[in-house]
Image (cartoon, rainbow, N blue to C red; front, side, top):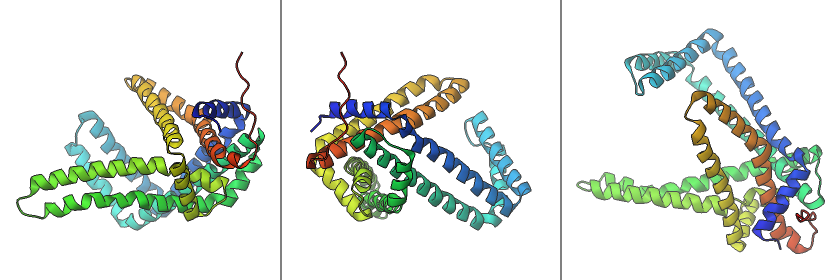
Length: 308
């Protein structure tokens, strides 16, 4: 059984030998952008080009006025009222477009996420992977992971119960300070609940795809994996958090000027798509395989050669 350091080193070697692992993330970005443009074109066709341009112009005025003054101004308020009046008759159309965009984007993202894990699995176990693996795993597990993600979102949302005492106390007379304290404690508990869930459910995607499980069984298997390997999962999650904080910290240097901000956003997007996301997927996949499948006697890819 590999240590976390060995998982990271050997996973990086697998990624280095298989640059095609970035393909799912590149395709995901492109396809979701294309889907957004199709939905946008459909929206324009329904409400009309003139109305769409008028609403877009109004939104642009609101953003520009807010940036110039730093706070809502009369011009921004007037533009907001104008946009509202133009958009109200087509509220149903906008809602339907948002629902289609949300569900479609989630399905596309899930398909390529599943494909990425499948490719990482094959690359880890055999040393190589192909584009066919992406589409094979995508067809097999997309719906299951999509439904599992809905269940997980509901589990996270269930943390709202921590706010109920504070909300109920707000209606009680002469209890404002107690209500505020209870509400603050509820928010802290909800944040803690969300952190625990984000760590505990992190292996779900890999358990579901690698072991070909359904939505509920995949969630149960992912949580069971966490329960059996708490320290390993926490350390891997900590590595992901440290990488995110490093990127955020470096980004603050470039946010000091509009030009460098645009350049940094473009560069960090490329880094995420081509390096970090494939690498993180391989790391999690290797950790799961090493602790579960490999422990059952199935051989893995040979580790990276030692540096002389």
